[in-house]
Image (cartoon, rainbow, N blue to C red; front, side, top):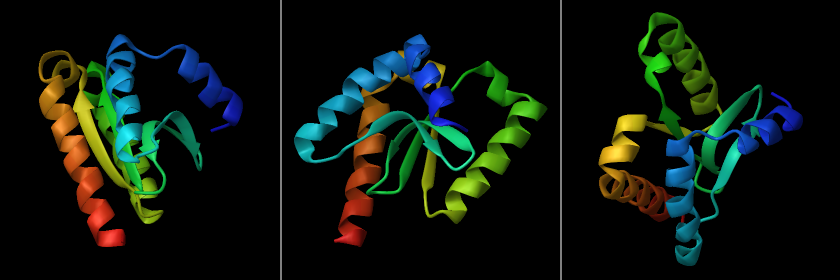
Amino acid sequence: MSVVQARRLRKKMTPQEVKLWKHLRQLRLQGYHLRRQISIGRFVADFACKRRRLVIEVDGNQHGYAKGLAHDATRDAFLEKLGYRVMRFSNHDVDRSLPEVMDTIFHALETRWAREE
């Protein structure tokens, strides 16, 4: 995907992506630099921490159908070959369980930090 497309997606984030982004930005205080709608190869990740090789996706209902599942599997395999761990959360998770989502993400960042340092 092009940088132009990633920029366009940043301007059209879903309500759940906006909600999660507000909280992910606060992780900078702990030293984690996350970016939103970032181009990685031919794909655009919702959020990524390049240093920790972590991709965070917020999935809507379309990801539960065959076409979405197949696309996600291809995308995840590509990202994993590059050394990324892909975490997926549903819109429902972000809306109803944001503290738990953030705890899970923070734990993943901390765990990867400990292995890399």
